[in-house]
Length: 69
Image (cartoon, rainbow, N blue to C red):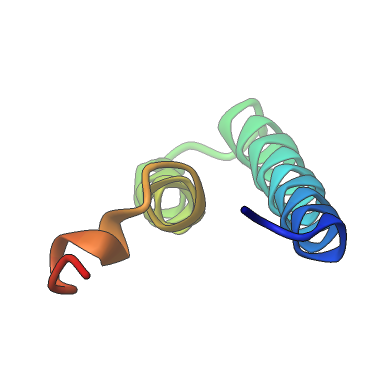
């Protein structure tokens, strides 16, 4: 059974990751609606940067390589 402090740490990490994702999405919106044309490479980079925390912290992709204990 997980301890209360451990659960609070995980919840705080979830909030931090959510905040980072919100900032990335806001930047994507600003870049996507910008007046300049040719923003596709920047949007692609931001999509990859935004996908990594989702894969790592919410989909737990790192557990695919670790043996099950």
